Length: 497
Image: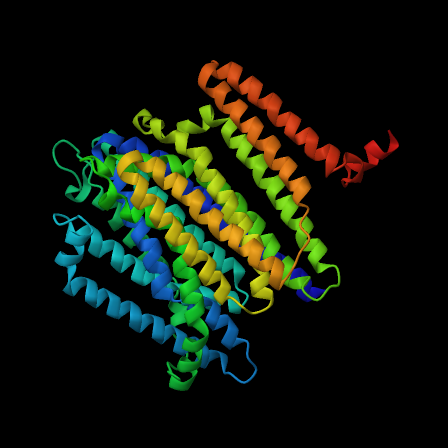
């Protein structure tokens, strides 16, 4: 019982810190869109470079976090040897990456279409190399069950980032203060400072790992390393395919778009898509609760029925969130401070639909994880990625960032369908498709009605209509799947009436 309580406590800390971290990081959107107008293209630069770093983070960690946990828990392995070997390996590849970037910086910056600003590329690539190295001490904290320190360092990084962005982009220019000559005489903002701020935050957190990086022998076990490599390469393929589905459109957009305002268009898309990331936060919350639940139920007789019901409730949960965002989009748009970004809000429903498909794909993915066939995940994600690329190459020159949004739907939709079809052969689960389909159709109809209300009614009228539709959807949920009489606390009242 004590172990169970500890597990629940740690899971809560990890989950709350990650979700809170994502939400706090969300606050960078109004700060940066207030400072950088859409026409300047600066937010497009931020969107583009951060997409590169997200991909590189997966490559430079190459699945070693999961691999570390797999080997450190083996009885025949010495935990400190596993930790030291993993740390030295990831540290060496990160240092090698930095050396290659610095040696070929002009060429890399030119390829990324920033020939006049190689420092932007250098700073962010050094930052992602440090982040990749930091991932192993973070994993070690989880192994040691130091959930509180893990959560604290994650939040320190994000809060410091927000504070420095707020200071540089808004506070100091408003007060006309120019410490250390950060600005010119006109207080012109430099988008490169966003990347330098990120590097400072990363370095501060790295220094906080002093105890985790000292006090033990640094012994590299070559044979252990070879076994770890054999284990980790499918995870690397799966990770690359997965992250490409999330970031590739933002990487290749400047190469495909035919106009001269590629960074402006990408910035509008990136800012508008951030609103849709509310769905990603909700999916993350469900994931933290669902992963331990699934593996904990793996040996139960009724596990497949439980997975089927869990899928249904996940879809209900995300569709409700989808309708809430669509219904109150006229309010949520003020997260983006500069109105020049608002034309991009038409991508929000599309990107959210793609996020729902990604969440369904995540839920479906457990069948190949439970039978230790993770290579299927690499295949599904890889094929989905190819579909995403094809849609972007074909349609971006004609439809700009709208093609990116629909490419995400096509890519995630393909991976989702493949995982379902193959999964029903390898690990059949009787999902309640009729009930799920009913919810999807109702949500789609309500979303269309909400969109028309947002377009043709005054804000107050649209909010009133959309709130009514939202209440109808909630009433449908309560009537069919969450009867009030069965709920805790309130159920006692309804059961008597």
